[in-house]
Length: 298
Ligand code: HEM
Ligand SMILES: [Ca+2]
Ligand SMILES: [Ca+2]
Image (cartoon, rainbow, N blue to C red; front, side):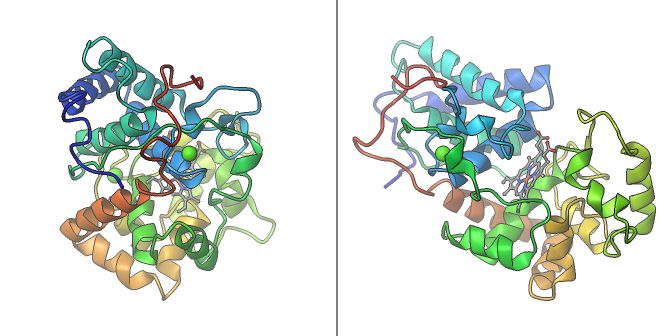
């Protein structure tokens, strides 16, 4: 059972210390924002929100192909915030890496113009991170609605939660290979993709492009957390099949239209959904541990 003021007695300034560290890291690079947000999602979907994704043992989660493109700046954000906490005598080794990641995620959403919200705390850090445990646990960009719904439902998240959380693709980057089959298939351009946009994507991602090249996922406001993602979907500008399907499938379309026309509704649904995401599979009480080094078990 998580609660908002979990560190009231042990580290009363945890929120301001983490926020200052995240803000400083953001001033060095924008990637702090999408990198941290995606890291939280990938952590919670594998063994729950226990910072397992940050462990750096051999054959760790982060070595799985589905995690390999997680931006190093997301990991570094947690490590920097942990160092800031450890330099405060009352907070040293008091706050779990899993809670630091949850707080940093709230801070990056707010820093990029999204809603702010209270974060429930009290997560403990896991002691296991294996490459094998990632298999079939994260959604793929070619997933259709039923696959998305099934995977999110397995963590207690509704279709509306899934759609709101997909709105995270209002920020950040994708490597060309994640959607190249939509623009270079033998059968032609994916018909659900806006043709103009597809041609632009072909220019930014020519065949045999350097695999390190990444493009903005939101072509309109790539650095702002807003509801542009849903407006893009209405125009056929969802980058992945898993994005565009939310508008082309009649079962999810009404919610996309609502979020596109009502940013308050989107923000509220996002806060509800990310709070639920933050409860997935958490370790509490005397389960797990509070890691002294976020990349290593104690
Ligand atoms: C619904 C199913 C989802 C699928 C199929 C999916 C897939 C992907 C893929 C393929 C990328 C590009 C990775 C790369 O090429 O480097 C990406 C990026 C990203 N995803 Fe998702 N994602 C999903 C849901 C989410 C959720 C729920 C969140 C967070 C709440 C999220 C946050 C992000 C962010 C912020 C980025 C940009 C990362 C960066 O710029 O470093 N995604 N996603
Ligand atoms: Ca985890
Ligand atoms: Ca945006």
